Amino acid sequence: MQIQSPTTGMASADFSSEVRSAKLAKDMQEQEGQQALQLLEAAAVQPAPSSANASIGGNIDTFA
Image (cartoon, rainbow, N blue to C red; front, side):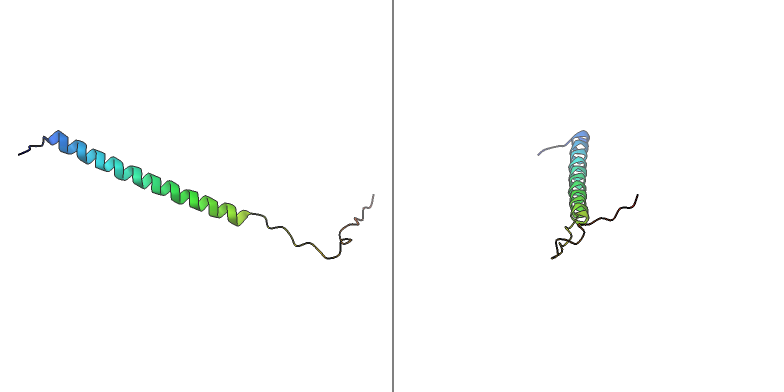
């Protein structure tokens, strides 16, 4: 027969709470990382389609 002291039970409860807290923190970090990747992908600049006519945009009118 084993008898647990009250302090042993408290230490076990504290450890369980710390593990649960660490897991929640890890899950939140992973979720924030996924959100950051989605934001970066959404903000990525798409190249503009090039025109078939290469002379378009080649002349710039300037007036002094």
